[in-house]
Image 1: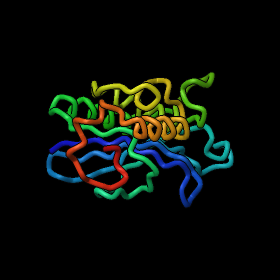
Image 2: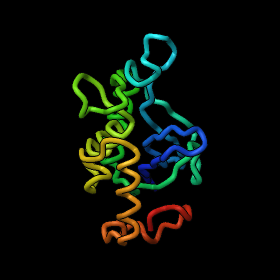
Image 3: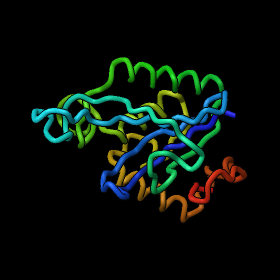
Length: 171
């Protein structure tokens, strides 16, 4: 079973919001992927802009990185999985510049939300306004829209409703 979740951390214990992807690979391995700033020099604007990197963590069904909400979740076809991994591997080899305000800010770069949305769309997955389209520009807005969609029982989530992987999932 190949499965993807778009997870959003609205701050949590470290007070840093983050959007990232959790992928269950064909062999059952779960890995989490997200764009983060490289914050190792005084010239890095405290991590608000500069070089980015794709952070890869070993995941679990409960999640390794803290998440406040599962913004979207889908089973993947082999074709979608291959496109997604192509995007991720290209990003690891040549990471985008990081800018906290995302690709909507003047200049070159994106943030964690923009990168996750771009990966989602590159794979050809269904788009949800405010969650997986280009209107989602930061974890706060993305997480709030996802929570509202869940409260309104978004019918596009019904395909996943039978999956009981975690109590905080949108189903």
